[in-house]
Image (cartoon, rainbow, N blue to C red; front, top):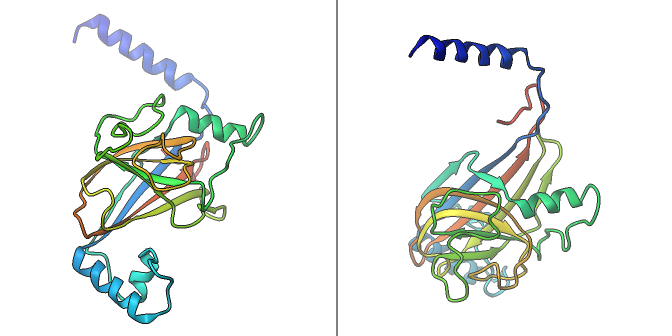
Length: 231
């Protein structure tokens, strides 16, 4: 490196060091996937039917597998792998001032979506990149298995969405995920969809027919300084 380049680099470092600290709030999303294979799923489904304690066609949520002491064969956690898209931020800020998001996320208005695209996340995206419309085999939007959970006692506070993908749903490579305010299971945000909130890229492997996979997004909003900072 020549002398002038070294001088320029030194000057930039000094200016940066002298600049006052900036306040910021980071967003961090952890994506957790739990997997039960076809044999485990079939066995638990049979036990559920035999017990007579569940409604017919009850969704096999993690709590049911736990009740019958069946652990997932694989669990993976991808940390800090997502961003809030433009429409998501508009919805968030609308809750502070202006027009609030309508409808808000709930047990009946909220879906976790997974797709096959590994294209990088961008704030302008309005659905999964793998979402090519009706009849798609590259994206699936699954209604959440319960109301989103807000944990205000954690540091920092978190927002959690969970959805269960059954034996015939999303049986292909999982490379992306996101959340929207849709009201029913669908292959596209365009069908019973709503505000598209976030998108992340996360290679989770390929789901096979007969398996049950659970996807959980935990979104946290960091503090400007101190031990609670999220980067």
